[in-house]
Length: 207
Image (cartoon, rainbow, N blue to C red; front, side, top):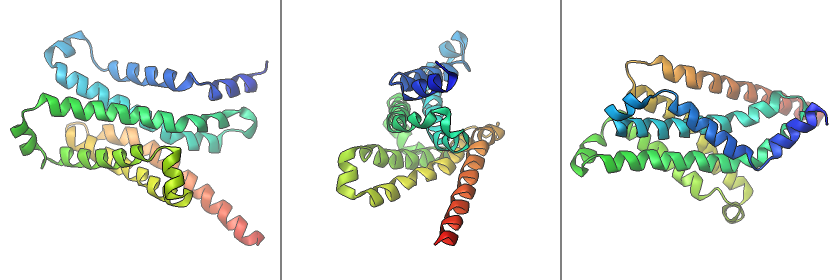
């Protein structure tokens, strides 16, 4: 069996989302050791859930770019079928992140913190992701219509500036962290936009 067939089988494998999930969790946990956990377990859990959600979000966001730049015969097209599941796994960790925060703070403190920039930005992102998660099913596609469903799910693009601002506002001492995470993603979207406009111009000339 040649390497292209092996890559194609891996891309289509139902185990791939599980492997990516485990990798995202391990990548998040690498930042902390046992001492960090014992010093502030809630902060540790919040960070782990939040970072796992972000890594899964990034993996999902990069799939169209990978398909765009990879050779057509490489067999990576099978990655498309995993995008919805990876998105739901990312949302699951967002829910765990938000739930951990809400359960770890007194209600009075939650009410006072809601006006803090990183909380306000984070909650707006959570509402957008909740809307997208609820409609990430075939029933919603049929009910809304494919065009309307696609337009609704373009709200996902708003999550890039929201996540950037959320992380930046939370970690003011390390503003470069957000740039390192999201600058390559923005670049990948710009490249995709360039290819989209280029292909659209070709189509218009052809007609």
